[in-house]
Image (cartoon, rainbow, N blue to C red; front, top):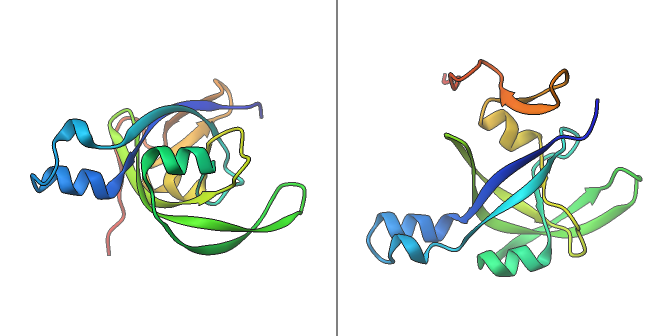
Length: 137
């Protein structure tokens, strides 16, 4: 399978809540659109320190990450980030890899948005077509 990228919008989830509550204006939500590498081997969203600062995300803890080259490193974990792809969205805590050159869109947000990599066309697509399926107990 080749490399798949997707254009996603990342928003500070706290800002989005404050805008919904009328505390700040919609245009004050800190957000950016990025060209992310879709990485089904990554667990969650991975961002750089620069992007964390740009989005105004607070650090909420530390987590050990194991990279593809088997190197282990302690990384910061942020408060929630809203991820938007087309008509789908997910909120996750991002893993901050200080010198990361790319945003990685990992398995947890992909699963939450009911998305998968189409290996034939090398694109991100809905697991169930255009219908978003959410399993609820």
